[in-house]
Every structure is written in structure tokens, then in C-alpha cells.
Picture: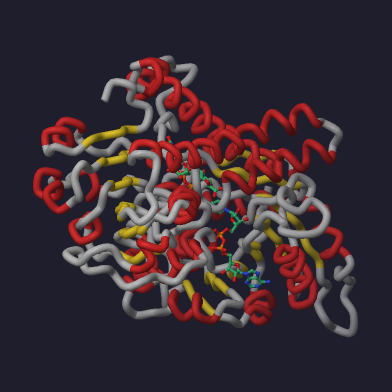
Length: 482
Ligand code: NAD
Ligand code: UGA
């Protein structure tokens, strides 16, 4: 099979997926010009920042990859039409959030950005263009993309080139925090499509660094559905282990021991069995809800209910943690200072989308708590946006309670280090598994806290003995023995 030669790629969407994915393609394929475009000028300016610490996405190793390719065969710009016109292959890597209103609100994917891209490609493409769905999409979306593109196809007229399209599905499986490793050494690359030449063209790009046996070819619909299913299975494991964690806490079992015991069974496997504050991130909840919507749409209400419970259990786990904090602090946190350590939805990312910390912080603010929040990578302005509450100035730890504390109004401020965040606090809640939280010197921190003080370790990263010997009380997710 001869592939269609790809010399120029355009990627629409310079987000958490588009940016790193295209940086790796450009790095591994120096003969291909890769142009990443986005409507968001500030984001593009950040991708072009000479200071690599200012890239809009924080991912270990991303700066080095961008540094090698940017200016050589990798560009970032807002010139969407020009980049489409120059491209042999266009990746659509735009956001596909859950619809907030109208038909399917709260479950179905909002495809307006994908549709806008398809229309823009239809308008600006030249010659034959392979259009690749990189965004996560409901099964059968390629039909929509294809019908928009087909309406723009034309035979050669007046000396102009004919215009034609092929549509492929190539979902992305990278996880944030390990994006570069996942892209450079993927478990698999999935390509779904109908046109064998187009499929081969995309497979050859990945073939520059991915072994051929890891490049899986399927039909379009299997590819689209596999992405939703993969996320649903991963999230299901987290809800399963979190449900067991709650039972461990009641029975004296330890969820880590249970996870090790069941994970040693090669049929179950050891990954994704870490109990915690529930899954966050931009995709698990959105993709499962989308699956739920599709099941109902296709007349499978029992299947929909099955998957919906994975999300319900996750929400329950987050509320369970805020409730138990209140209970252990004598039934009230009104006016009390609580330190939240970690706000990102997982370690090694600055992303806070659907972070468990948001729901837990909301619950505690609702109870009138005074929250000091520290995350090594999250911008305080992002926290204010997520909580829909402006930050207060940090109170004087030596002084008495603030006016807000006395009135029972929930407030938050941004801590600049773990030490200043826990100062004066009745409890520290660990919500993200940042490396620095694994190595805290609790003996040094404890005297700064108001006694009796608690550590609520929702990520099980602390050394229980070190916490307890510092005179602090400890709750650890899934640990019935502490
Ligand atoms: P994102 O919000 O970070 O980035 C999307 C970008 O697309 C934004 O910068 C936005 O300005 C841009 N955009 C939207 N419409 C546009 C248009 N018409 N023209 C030009 N630019 C436009 O989203 P993301 O996290 O990169 O996710 C993108 C897709 O990939 C989603 O479908 C998501 O489900 C999927 N996905 C995400 C991850 C992840 O880890 N974040 C992993 C795998 C798959
Ligand atoms: C996830 C998938 O792992 C990727 O394969 C997929 O491409 C991506 O979603 C997507 O489609 O967006 P991501 O959300 O970036 O990646 O990160 P994960 O490592 O999967 O973590 C998701 C959430 O689950 C985090 O909040 C994490 O803390 C939590 N988690 C993960 C647990 O609570 N326990 C675990 O054992 C694993």
C-alpha cells in the first residue's frame, strides 16, 4: 500500500493534547512541517514564549521537546486558515466538554468546536486533505465531520485543484503528568478509518518511532468507541477501589494491602488501584457521561445506569471526605483554619479541571471554613476561578479570628509554602500526591498547628508513624488500622 505523502500537518487546538502531541510528532519527524493553531492568542503567545517555563501546559520533559523542534519544523500561531490551506493532514484537537444546556445537557458532548473546525477545514483546505479526529468524540461523530467535508468536495475546475477529504479517528490516550513518556512510548496507537491510503499515511508518521505491532487499525466506529470505553474502564477501577477503601476504614482492613493482594492476580493487574479522593481531570467524568448518554440514545437504559454509577460513586467519595473532616473536627469547621495541600487533579500537572480539591473545598467553604490552599504548580488565580471566590489576604496567625471567621463566612487564601499553609490550622488535607508532600517533616510542622490537630491524607502519601509520633492525629484513605 502506497501512502499519501505527508509533508505538512496542521493541528487545530493548542491545548493539553494538541501542544504535546504535535511537539512529539515534530520532534520525531523533522521532515514534516507541523503548524499548531488556536483561536486563543494568549495560549499561542505562551507556546511561543522564549522562557520555556512559561509554556501553557506543565508536563515533565515537554520543554526539552519544544525546544528541539520549535522554530525548526514546529510553529504555534493563530493563522488557522493559512495553516489548513498548507496542510496535507489536519488534526482536530479541540475541547469537547459536556453540554451545559439544550438536548443532552449534563451528559452529551458539546460538539460545537469540532463542527466549527470541520466547517473551517471545508472552507480553507486545498487538494486532498486527511482530517484526523484527535479529540475524544461520541461514536459516529465522524459521520458529521464527513458530511460537512463532503459538501465541500469538488472536481478540478478552471485550472484549480480538485478538493477531497478522508476522515480518520486517532484518539489520544496520553495521561497528564506523563504525556511525553506516553507519547514517546505509547502502549498502542489507534487508527480508525475506511480509506486504506489515508490510514497508511497516518500509520507511517507514527511508524517513525512506534513499533508497527503497537499501531492498531480498526473501523471508524470501533476507534471512536474504544476511547470512551478505555476511559470508562479506567475510571471504573478507581470507583471500585474507592468503594473498597470505605469498607476497609470500617473493618480494620487496609486498602493498600487489599489492592496488592488483588492486583497480584495477573487477570486483574496492579495498575489504577490507588484509592484517593476520587478521579478528577477533564475527561473521565465527561467521557463516562457521554457513554451514558449514548447508551440511553441507543435504547440501552440498563447499560447507561451501570456506567452512571461509576460517576455517582466518585462524587460520593469526594463528599464523604469533606463530611468526615467536619465530623472529626468535633462536628464543625466554621471559623476553623484548614490547610489544603494540593489543588491539581493529580501530581505533575498544573491542570485543575474537575479536581477533587474543588468539590471538597466547596463543601468546606459552605461549612464556613477558612482555607489556606497551597499547590506547587497551580496559579492562585486559577483556584479563585475554580472556587468562584476571590482570595482573601492571609490572616495574621498570631492575631485572633478574622471577621469572616467570626461571621461563619467561608474564605480562602493562597499559601506560598507548606509551612505557612499549615500555620494555625486545625487540620492539613493532602489532596494531590505531589512528591514534596511525601517528604514533609511533620515533627517540624506540628508545633505550628493548633492542637489537637489532624492530618487527613486522601492520597496515602505520608509516613503514618512520622505523623503520629509528632502528636498529630491521622486519617488515611482506606486505612482501617490507623
Ligand atoms: P484544551 O481545552 O486544553 O484545548 C483545546 C484548544 O482548542 C483550546 O486552546 C481552544 O482555544 C482551541 N479551540 C477550540 N475551538 C477552536 C477552533 N475552532 N479553532 C481553533 N482553536 C480552537 O483541551 P485538551 O485537554 O487538549 O483536550 C482536547 C481533546 O482531547 C478533548 O476532546 C479531550 O477529551 C481529549 N483528550 C484530552 C486529554 C487530556 O489529558 N487533556 C487526553 C486525551 C484526550
Ligand atoms: C486519563 C487516562 O489515563 C488517559 O489514558 C486518557 O487519555 C485521559 O484520561 C483523557 O482522555 O483525558 P488523566 O486524566 O490525564 O488521563 O490522568 P490519570 O492518571 O488517568 O488520572 C485521572 C484521575 O484518576 C486523577 O485524579 C488521578 O489522581 C486519579 N487516579 C488515578 C486515582 O485516584 N487512582 C489511580 O489508581 C489512578
